[in-house]
Image (cartoon, rainbow, N blue to C red):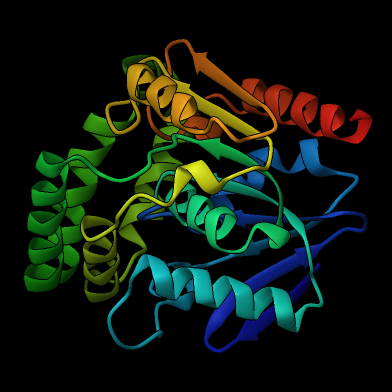
Amino acid sequence: MAFHLIDRVAVEDVGEGDAVVCVHGLGGSSNTFTPLMPALARHRVVRVDLPGSGRSQRAEGPLSIARFVEALLSVCTRLNIGAAHWVGHSLGTIVCQHMAALHPSRVRSLALFGPLAAPPDAARAAVRARAAKARAEGLAGMHDITHALVNASLSADTRQNQPLAVAFVRESLMRQDGEAYARTCEALADAQPAALDRIEAPVLLVTGDEDGVAPPQAVRALAEKLHRAKSTRVVVLPRCGHWTPIERPDECQRELRAFMAALQRS
């Protein structure tokens, strides 16, 4: 595995074959996709910590979807990646949709876990309040935010029966720097939908039946707007919340492996 630091953005690069770029969500990092790696064994997998997250927390200035897209384009240019398959989670799915709409030649497919086009208005206000708390209270604020999100974003089954998944999500969130996390919250709160009618790549959409961020009905509505996509598939995983790759790794691997295999046959 190679590690790169590109304009203060931490990047892991492993494997050979067609490139896959993984884009995590708010409070995540490249490690969000570790459970999916077996499904990508025959690919070159590039996992990026977005500016302001994970090991890229030293990124300065305001954060936005546009900045994330530009950072990813810079990573791909530096690593000589042209077209790639894109795998996103949560906030990362918004970034991937913008990439596909604005730079279609860069996107061979989209596999989106916990996908949303943009936050609804009520969620925007809640995310801004979370940003203010993280900025003002630092570590103590992140502790409170983590406790609330574990209860809200993981399914009841995960909380009761998967202590390692709970521990992963807690650690992923609590490791975030309060100020950098706040700026990422603001990027999500300001996010606007991509031009979905411009996306032509095949799309896989995976959510959980208890996902309050990307509820099944909203994901189905998102799929209906992708009318120019070569194909769309919506999968709803039972007893699963918003952290789909962490809560249901086997099922997510199965769906991703089948999606990638179908692309190779087409």
